[in-house]
Amino acid sequence: MSCFDSENGVSVVAGMEWTSSSGSNSSKSPMDLDRIRRAVREILLAVGEDPDREGLVETPDRVARMYAEVFQGLHQDPKVHLQKKFTQKYDEILLIKDIRFVSFCEHHLLPVIGQAHVAYIPNGTVVGLSKIPRVLDVLARRPQMQERLTEELADLLMDELDAKGVATVLEASHCCMTIRGVNKPGSNFVTSAMRGTFRERLATRTEVMSLIFGSKN
Image (cartoon, rainbow, N blue to C red; front, side, top):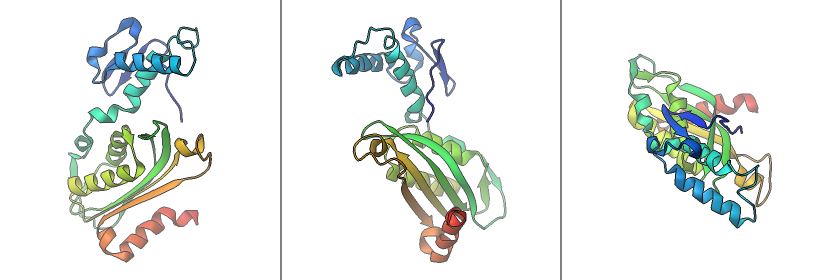
């Protein structure tokens, strides 16, 4: 996972500008960045660090701007990416594989890094290829549980696309169990949600799972 550090004190996220405390512009942010800065400073003090030493003096501001980026989905509506549809007579499986996503576990606020496989069977209309990854990004950029993320994505696509069926499969590594606790690096958590035809017809469900994982066997 790569984290950003804007050295000039300004980060542009989703069309809004966040500035550092040296040039505070928190009114433009839907998040309370000053409150995050104060909280991070308190955490540093609580663990026995000196938040005023050179290496940490700007850390509260960096963390605040990072949270503004990785949790921006809290203030976005994923439905906006599915409003533009195209009439298309196609009634077979449409599948986008290996969509990388990054989220944060709501229990420890540690990264969840994985890939999603999303399929749907259209009912007369299709959506642009980039729109499903954009929807996933909005939903993932919130404190999340993978189980909920998998179902939210499936339900949203089912409703907004009026699809005959939707299948979502997510595979992810959770830092809350790879760098702490049981310390099991290399482990992956897999979740799936089947809606419509994929849930009702075993053959259709088997077909999509084969399309997703067949080459990995």
